Length: 341
Image (tube, rainbow, N blue to C red; front, side, top):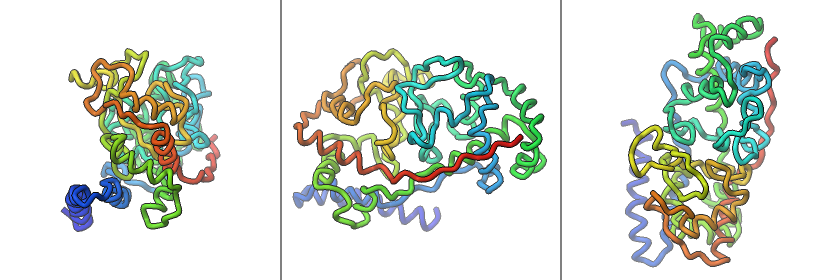
C-alpha cells in the first residue's frame, strides 16, 4: 500500500472515531463528518493499456461529438451529453434513433471516470465498455460497428488521429471505445463549488440555511447513507420507491431480490444543472426530490431499507435544497472540436 493511500485510510479511521466523540460532546456529527469531504478526489482507475495522452483525448473528443458515429449520421454522444446542460440533455428521458423516447434519463458524464459501475443499472464496469454501448444500441445511435469502422476508415482525417493515439492498432471497436473513454475521464469537477470553499475554511462561502441543510444531509435527512465522499455517491444501487415504474433496474443484471427496481446512486455534483431528476426523470425540481424522500418514497414495494419517512419541516426542506445548490461549480467554457474530414 503506498503512502498516500495509507494517509487516506488513516483519515477515514480518524473520522470514524471523531463522529461518536462529537455525539458525546453534543457537537453535530455532520460537522465532524465534514472532514470526509475534504479528503479530495480519488485517483481514477485507468486500464494499463489506455493511459491518457493528449492524442488519445483529442481523438476521443472528436468521436464523442461526431454524429457520423450514428446510423442516421445526426446523433452523437454529445447530442444527449450536452456540456451546456451539465453533460445531460435537460429531458425527463433521452431521445434516440428516429426521435424515439427512451425509458431512462440521460445521466451526466461528470466524474463518471470515478464510478465502479456504468449506466443506471451498472451493466458495464469500465468506461471503455460503456463508450460503445449506446453507439450500437438500436434505440439510441443505431450503428453497426462493422459499418462504423468502414465509414471512419473512409474519412481521411481520422487515420492520422487513430495512429497518433494508438500506433499500429488501427480503427476498431477497441480503439474507438478507448479513445472516447479517455475523453470522458477529462470531464471532472473543479471542486470549486461554494460547498468546497466552505469545507476548506471560507466560512461565508455558503448561507446559514445551507449550513443547516448540510447538518440535515448528514443527519436527520439520511442523505449521506447513499451520497458519500467527494463525488457524493456510494456507487451502489437502491430502490427509492419511485412511482409509476416497472423498470427492473439492477435486478436485470444481478438477480437479487433487493435489487428489484434499484438504480445506481448518481453524483450530486453540479446537480443544479441536471434536472429533471431520477432515472426516469420523475421530478423537475430539487424541492420535489426532497419531498419524495421526506415521504419515505411513494411505491413501498421492495423499498430500500435506507428509505424512511423523515418528517422534515418546511424550513428543513428549504435548508436541504439550499445545501444541494451549493454543490454546483461555476460553468466552464467548453470548445467543440473541429471534426476530421
